[in-house]
Image 1 (cartoon, rainbow, N blue to C red):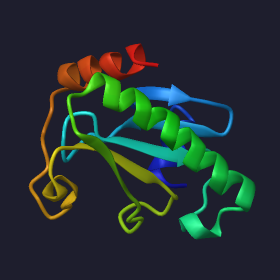
Image 2 (cartoon, rainbow, N blue to C red):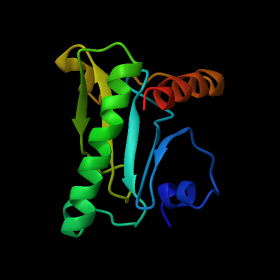
Image 3 (cartoon, rainbow, N blue to C red):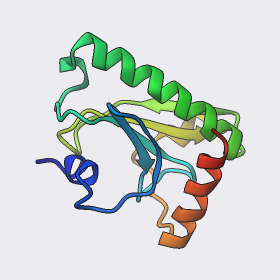
Image 4 (cartoon, rainbow, N blue to C red):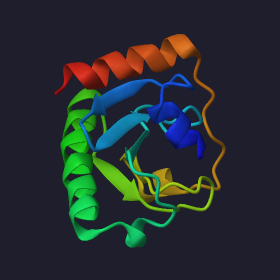
Length: 129
């Protein structure tokens, strides 16, 4: 069971910004920028391109809805999208507020927000829906 499946099951806490029957969006606890969100299907599949077509397209549409809320809540030029998938064996999309191309550089040092800062960011994004 992946760490993301444990989040879905409620075994590990997360700062959830959006949820549907099939998908979950929550803050990355080691973000590249404030408002960095992970969007996942609730079904555990390692590789995003192994998702069935319905789940894959639903995930993309859900990510678009979440990205719209992030852009309203967090000052940025755009919300960048990245699919890396090497660190957790559960398909996921990174949504990252960005002002420069380098804002999506995963080799940059990550931020270390407090739980209170994460909760405040979650509240800002949830209020933007």
